[in-house]
Image 1 (tube, rainbow, N blue to C red):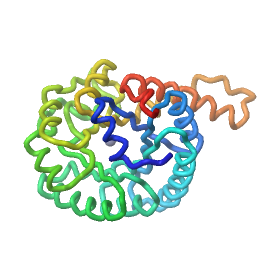
Image 2 (image 1 turned 180 degrees about the vertical axis):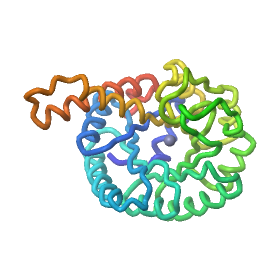
Image 3 (image 1 turned 30 degrees about the vertical axis):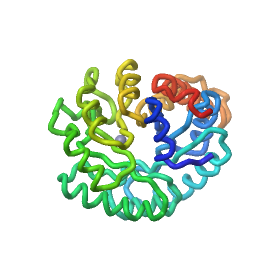
Image 4 (image 1 turned 90 degrees about the vertical axis):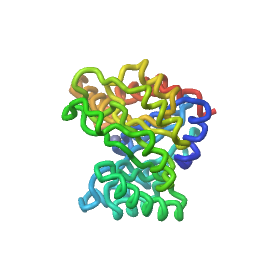
Length: 282
Ligand SMILES: [Zn+2]
């Protein structure tokens, strides 16, 4: 069944577990994700459509993919939430609402505090009128390979409380030492900071950039206020490696899909276990 993100994360927050949110790229990928979520009895969060709205090709693709994902989500025996990840423009958010997403991520994390609040509050007003949830970001989650350790981009607990109150966002992505893509070395999350942010706000917290964070830290973060954890790079690498390492001589089209999504499904299984979401769809 399809479910709103706010509702899905409410239980995760109460029971202190995380739900992994996976990059899903096409129909076969979506079916693979649902298959594993059903096997693991885990709720599923699908991240889709993060390209710029100005790309005309992406518009058609987004519309098609959203309808297809909603169709499979409705048929699923576990709860599925669809998130339009990282939108940077008002128009981009509205396109997501029109396409049928239950949650829009409005990323204004590169803007100054007041402007971030002003723009996100505007999106929240429109989205809530359409019964769509909004995930926002405070502090900035950069790229792991670019980012030198810079605590200036970390989320500040005292700002987080004010930010959530003034924007009305439903979930908050935080910057506590995490980054997108691959990391230089092993990332180190600031658990004291996470504890302070969690105490200062009442919304579920989100961690972007999960790939490469040690397993024990992921589990600890999910027990300390992180309710949604975004996994992208790990899934991309699994698809790529699945094809590169397979013997596809004589394979038909679906043999290639099997090679691509076999490893992807194992990655999902792993993340559903370490976040504690496995078994929570019952
Ligand atoms: Zn992200």
